Image (cartoon, rainbow, N blue to C red; front, side, top):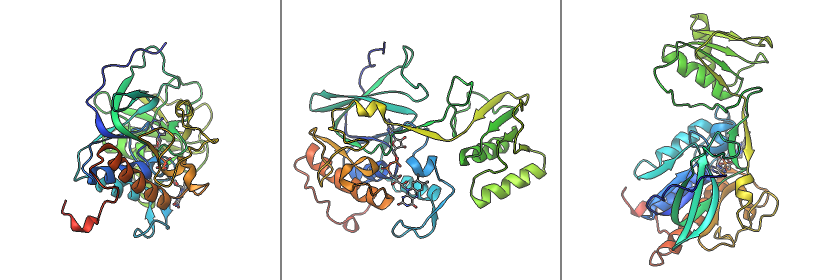
Length: 321
Ligand SMILES: Cc1cc2nc3c(=O)[nH]c(=O)nc-3n(C[C@H](O)[C@H](O)[C@H](O)COP(=O)(O)OP(=O)(O)OC[C@H]3O[C@@H](n4cnc5c(N)ncnc54)[C@H](O)[C@@H]3O)c2cc1C
């Protein structure tokens, strides 16, 4: 049984599910149009696939950002939100969509619960319009073998930094966790089954330095029975996308895609879709396309919630933020 949702928070004009490039840019455009925006994501940080799957890789085909790492692209998208107050809710998975007075109510459960159990407190967020920018689904950490819980990075530390920590995995989050923990004074054991760690050249150089200084012990390839004596452990082994909660939403799904018109409108009034999830883009999954669809959805959502606002935004160069 799932608990009843706690009382809804004050409504926003728009609620965006997914803080990947489509969701972040939709948040920017909706805020630029003067709408109040809430943005939620299952992961503990924004960026979608760019932050989770390839923050260390160089992306070449984003306009006006030649040869930029995916991690830097995310930083710039977040920086573009700085003039606005966006209510960003992280580590929450959107699970339910129900009609609500003049819009919709989106119910969430904390990420980390594969299926919400009785202890999974639900939150509910009312909004006049919803933009679903959920990509391939909620990017949930691949659970470690024999571990009950999912661990992800960045992670809130419940108290002071642990004295000794074990970070297991070869993904960019593992390298980053090891470096950030070492920076806090933690002695880190970093292990991976293969002799390969991912990260930017700067991160990998820093890892080598800290290893030479004895502040990080590296085991790669790690013996199967490695069990360091530590105060805290992070298993970081990549992500599995989970679309299941959204598949229950009545959106006339075609496989893993949501049909939409050119404005990003789904069959539900006031519910829009943008980015990889939208069937409107065909099987053409590109950041540039996510941006274009996000701009269209956000501007049509603006007109939907405030019919006095025209769909067309005018030129941002006529404004001063
Ligand atoms: C390895 C790799 C390399 C790539 N390289 C390039 C490239 O060079 N150039 C290029 O243009 N494209 C590239 N892409 C594709 C590009 O990353 C995607 O097109 C883009 O990320 C789509 O953005 P999005 O915002 O639609 O979805 P996503 O980036 O997938 O973001 C969706 C977000 O929604 C969240 N979410 C989903 N469901 C829920 C839910 N129920 N509750 C809460 N949150 C939820 C997810 O956690 C995720 O953070 C690459 C993809 C991969 C995997």
